[in-house]
Length: 412
Figure 1: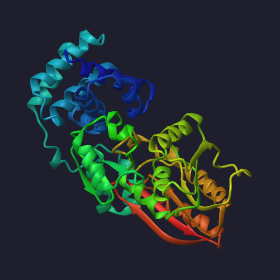
Figure 2: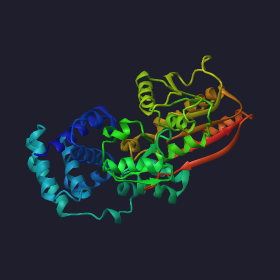
Figure 3: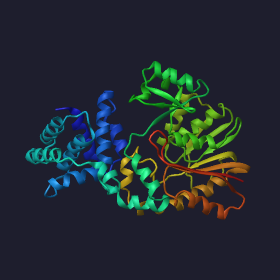
């Protein structure tokens, strides 16, 4: 039996039992595996997680009663391979799923699993012809209706068409050492399939990038394209004092600090010590001595934080723009994010107190939700006539583009 499928089962069972995040559970479980096995396990875990509604639709006609969680996970894995993994033969998808029952303590259900998966294989559905958007794109109806109301039916379907795709990976050249073309050359020398994309290098191959010499030498960091665009919009200059209020893991702070040519000061804050250490290690690897990171609670004003020329306020959010990276976000209850705008506005209010006169501040999120985006900025501007809105942008996820993202540029 291919051990990769057993590992994928164990991760999915952990996610189901503990409501663990798929990306965190994956990182913990597959660290020591070969790159090829990692890619297969990741495809299974993320694929089953993101396609759960579609898989339920496929499985339900052939499963007459509710069954054990372990059996359901095995059926999800089998059905996912049958429908979404072209390189896996039907016989392998079915037989390994039956074997999984023995490996995971549910041998009694081998015949059921075998029968259901054979029926699924023999009665294929053309998913493209399904009119129900929830089933077709495996997205809850409440989130679909939410996006339709916010952005209209056409834009909603544009979003849905990409949420199950593989999120693109972009490398940001460390401009202290290399430009875009030079970084691409270094990566090509490491057999990484890549291409230039504006100022960034788009990675097209599945590599453990952190194991590469150019990464260890601090020649690049990984950051989404939309996030990079937001950091650039801050227009921080050499010698500026910059605050990155909710910084971890630090991608925007690194982009800002490199744009400042490692001059001036970037203060990168986070609420949690272990996340501050992520920023520190990244800055050290990149040779960025102008970054100082420390623990800070963004909702509390701190007298010892200096006045700044530039402030980036990338607040905690619902994450509806990064569903490609964290597929379980789509299943969030909308009521669970209702209180976020209050927190976001509070963080923005506190951050604004650190800004010097005639200076610039950016408010940003990685979500697609006007209540957390435009509405928060409007509420802030209603209370602060000294600020004006310079630019406002919603980035929608695209096949070759960045994540769903929002930022507003404010000046006083």
